[in-house]
Length: 586
Image (cartoon, rainbow, N blue to C red; front, side, top):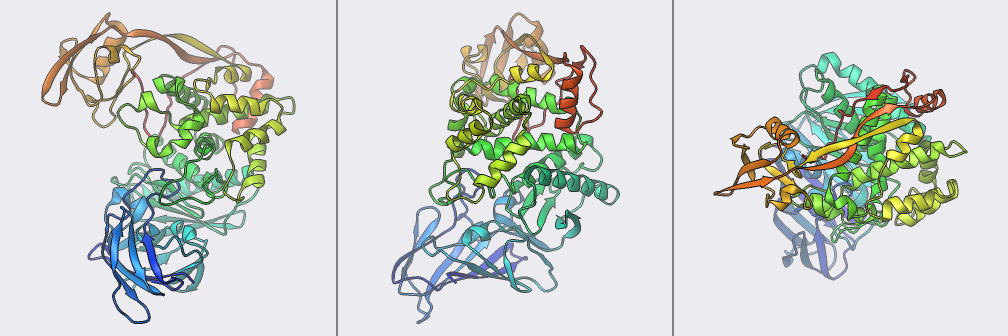
C-alpha cells in the first residue's frame, strides 16, 4: 500500500485535516503534489492554493523532516524511508465545488484534488474518512469498502475519480437493466416533491438509451450528484458518477427541464466515452504538465452530439429542435474568423488554452465540443446514407469495444482508419473534416437527408456581446466591420446611433440602418466608432423536400415516430442550447 490517508472533515472551519502515510518511500528527495489539472477539466488550476500547515515526519523516528515548496503544486521532502505528511485544506467555494469539493456546516462533497500524492509511488490507495457524528456517507462504485468509513482504491487515478457526499443529502435509487442508479440531491428547489419522480423517469429512459448504444453498462452502479446552488456551475464526469448543478427553476420551466436532462445525458455518456474510451495520451495522463490529445473532439464532440440525440429519443425535444441545434452550432462556428484558420485536431491539442472563452477567442480558436458535434452529425449522416445503412450507434459501439481501456488511448489516425474500414471513403472524409480548417459544413448532409437549406443574406457588424453584461463587447471578429473601426473586447456600448443602448436596438440598427455609430466607454475614455454592416450569406431556415423513405429514416434515427413533415414545411431555427455559452455574432 503506497498511499494511506486519514481525512478528517471539520465542518465548522470548512476544512479538511489530512494525514498521509507514504510507506513505500525510498531514502532521498521525495516529491508530493496536488494535480495541476484533472481529466474533464482541461485547464491548469491552482488545486494547491488551499493547502496550509504542510509538515512531513519520518515514520520510524517521528522527527520532522525538511520540506520546501517546489513549483505551484508540490513540495520536496528529504526522506529517509517511510514518511507521514500532515496538512490542512480549506474547502468552501461552491463555484469551484465540482473540482475540489466543499465542506459546509452540515454536508460535504469530498474530492481528492486537495490531497497531496507522490507521483513516484504507484499502487493502491487507502482512505479513512473521519466524519462528524451522525453524518451518513454516499460513495460511488469503483473502490473496495473495508469498513463503514474506509475505502481502498486501485490507484491514485481511481481516487481522483471518486466524488463522495457526506452529511445532509437526499437519495433515490432506481434500477436500469439490473444496475442501480443513485440520484443524490444536496439540496432542493421549488417543485421538488411534485416533479422529482418525473425527472427521475426521464433520467432512467436516457440511461437505457445510452446502454442501447454500447450494449451494456460499464459500472456496478452509477451516482448522479445534484445541487441547485445558483453559485455552482457544475457538470463534470467521473467513471462511476457525475456532479451536476441544476437550474433552480428546473421543475417549472420547460427550457430548464430540458437543459438539466441534456447535461445529465452528456455526463452519463462520458462514463463510456472518455472515462473508459480515452484519446491518447489520457490513458496515462501527466497530472502535472498536462496531456494534449488530438482526438478530444471525439470525447466531447461525439458526447455533445449524443446529448441532443438522446433527448430526442427520450421524447424531451422534438425533431425540429434537434435539427435547429445542429444548424445553429454550425452557424455559430462558421461566423467566427477562427473557423477558417483552426483545425478540429488543433483545437483538441490546444484544449488547455481554449476550454474557456476569452477576448480574441473567436479569432484564434474553435470549440472542440461544438466542432466535434458537427463532425459526429456528419459521420452519422454519412453512415446512414451509405449503401449498407450503417449508423453511428453501431459504429461507435464497435469503436468503444475495440479501443476502450487500451494503453495510452486512441489517436485520430486510428479513428480515421477504423471508420475507413467500416465504410470506404469515410476515413478520408473524417481526415478532411478534422485535419483541415474550414471544412465543417453540414448543408450537404442535411440536403441528402431531405431538407432544403434556404440561404439568404444577413447584415453583420461582427460583435459578440457578453451574456451577463449585455452592453459589454465580449469579442470582435477580426475580419468584420466592427474590427475595422477599432472596437475591442470589454468596450461598453452606451449609445447606438445617438440613442441609449439596448440589445434589440443594436440588432435593429444593424439590419435597417445604412451605418451604425456606437458610442462606447473604454476604461475612463469615451470613444465613437462608425461602421457599415456587411451582408454575409448564411442558412436562414430549413424546408422539407424529402421523400417518405427519408421521413422513415429520420423517424428511426431520432426515435420520433410522430415526425411527419409535408412538402415545403418550414423548420424554425430558433432553438439553440449551449452550456459553454452562445457566442452569437451580431
